[in-house]
Structures are given as C-alpha cells and as structure tokens.
Picture 1 (cartoon, rainbow, N blue to C red):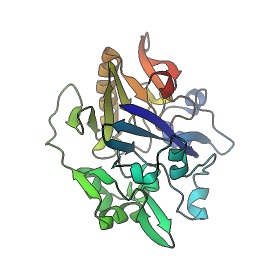
Picture 2: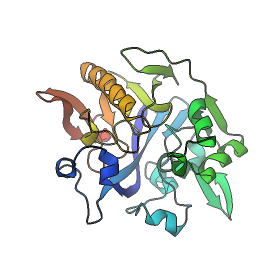
Picture 3: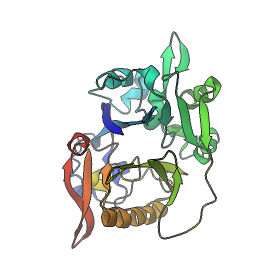
Picture 4: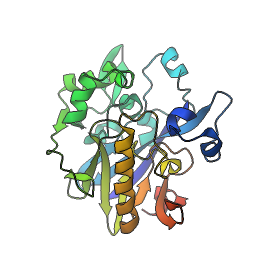
Length: 288
C-alpha cells in the first residue's frame, strides 16, 4: 500500500463560523483571521494505492464555478486536481475509485469538470462512492444546508453511470462510532453531527492506523471538545462523536490526517491536564 497527500490549494472561511461558540480571542491565537475575520484553510485530498486500485478521497473545490461564487471563498495557491495528481505521477485515468466523505462543495467540487460547456466526471474510469444517506440528503437538502450542495457537483456523477451508493446498516448507539468496511485495509467511520452520515476513511497500513478527518476535525484547532463548527447541523452530536473518536484514537495511537488544516497535515494525540490534545504535527511523507 502507498499513500500520497494531494494539495489543491487554500481558501478562506469566516473564523466565527468555523469555531462556533468559542470566542475569537481564543481561536485567533491558533488560526489567525484577516481584517475580514476570514481564516485560511487547506483543500487536501488523499490517494491510496492498494493492490490494483488507486483510490482518491475527496476532490477539493474544483474550478468550474464563476467568479462571484469564488469571491466568497477567496481560493489561492490553487492547483487543478489533475495537475496535483501529476506531481505524484498519477493520471486521472488511473483513478479507479473516488470515495467522497460527503457532498459539500469543498469536498466534491473537483469530482466534476466543465469541458466545452459540458459537465463531465473528472475521472472517467473511476467508480464514485457516496453514502446513500448523504446522497439522498444532497438531493433533498434541509434549508440550512442547501447552499453547500450544488447540483452541478452531484447530478453529473449519477448521469455518468459511475455512481455507486454505499448502503449503511441501521445505526446502533454504542460507546464507539459506527464502522463499515470499504476494502481489505480501508474502513469508514460514520458520523452525523456535521452532516448526515459523513464518512471518515480509516486506513490500516502495517502497524499504523491513519484516519482522514474530513469535517469532524477540520484542523488541530478543533480537537478540544467545545470547538465545534457553526456549520455543523447537529453540534451536540458532533461533540459526542468527537469524544468517542478522540478516546479511541488516543488509546490506539491513530494518525490524524487533516483535510483543512492549512499548517498541520498530520498529528497524533496526547493526554494533557486539559484533556486530549494534538501532539507534534508532521507530514504524511514522514511516516509512510
């Protein structure tokens, strides 16, 4: 198995929205905001080569929206996903699977490309994997979440015939998060606080376990339990899910891989007098 971090640039989001009820005087120390209260975030994907499969997890924001749309998010240091993949000598035709943690625009935008005014899948030979619950939500979103689900990011996947829905078993409450198998070495933790049935890929590589954090923990700054995004649909559920995850991740010495942390790519967890916190950060290359 081989793992590769794939950077597609950075963008900005409101710091208050990203940290919810936590005062700016606290979060601004670790995630400094600009004069418009915007913080910088990464758009970081993950490629996993496992046997004959080349699996891409999430696809960033993409570049097909208009200038007005992008003006809200100020993308910068941007590199198109195909070019980012070329840096690790992978062509778009080599991707066999695209596993989407959820369907918000900053995670699925690069899955679809505009070619001669036609929307087509960016990875012609790939199966696009989406949780059935999340797919149905994206088609019939609640009013609060509707702006995050863009038709042009979603419907072309179905129209291409490349969509494969992941059927989740009935939810059962327990002290640990629900987990489903994806491949021999990859499973997905299922969480519901940020959006319904978001998937967190969990990769077993030798003696290491690496978890792609998506939006359960967008950054190391979100590890303390009360640091829950204002974007989360069910913040109290997020808090419970964070506690379950962090307890297990610390005990089992997981490596956390951050999709949105602009500074820290990976970390392990340590126990402190204030609870579980991020240990020293490092790049994926350092451990694989």
